[in-house]
Image: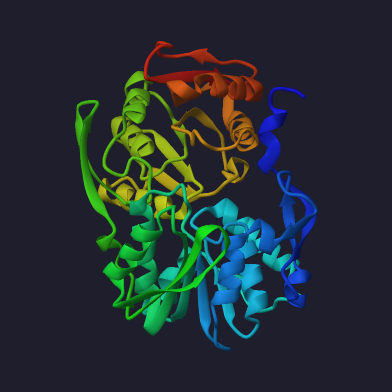
Length: 401
């Protein structure tokens, strides 16, 4: 086994796995694109106790419009749609990679589950913001911060029609009490309606719904000084470094020459710190800022407007750098440290293809991950070097195309 093969466990293949769920014939015919960490059969009762609890405990009425937030690869929506064939299931995720995988899985099962569709942020802003959703379903990620979960609950409440309800699948030992308290902050009637295996709980909340989504209620203004300039930009609870410029990004911006680039690629832009600071410092340069998180892209686009940079800053939601037109003479990144190796190898391989010959990628890495990222970047570029001292809390690595 080579050094990189152990990182490929989450890579999506063209093979499918068969879903089995009790005696539900529709669910037993579902097929989803499998990842290497999954076998040929997924037994919902055994492998997904939280999903089994939701499918058994959530009773939907025919014709109801149901929005599943953070839908992931679409498996949850497919099983819930099979359990409630009369409901209209709408699947959404802020991650464009998840959204595309969900779209592929919904299309794969369209013949047996015609009641599902995948919606993007534009749909949420146009239709559901007026309160046209009857039911919200949300499975909080156990690794998400409480502020991110609270922000998602608030978004969900504002998407609900009058008299709508929200279901939250939680765990009694992993945030359950706090999740219930969050619901009490947004709804007047909250209670546990079902308990499942392994400590899972199904919460139902009613008495919410507050009309159109107001992004200003989620945003906060952050102020920071760098490279002799002061910036006042917006952020949201779900975004990295939501409270201000983090130390790693500061090191990256202060250690790289930003004065001469013609076209810069900001990989994983978040709320826009790297690309927007670079475009401010270099008044003639153009930047393309890319992120998989559509919420981050929305915030970064608004920040570009705040700075008067929309003519020189393009902000794109994508998980495929290969779709970005043109080439670049500089690429910068504060990458997702916890992403799997296959994703990172693909990301930096595409970054190399987008760079002009001899032009460089600079990325900042927390010390804990330096060895891992050196291996991945060298595999993608064929070279890597330390741009800043190797013993700092954060390190900037560089590689040339």
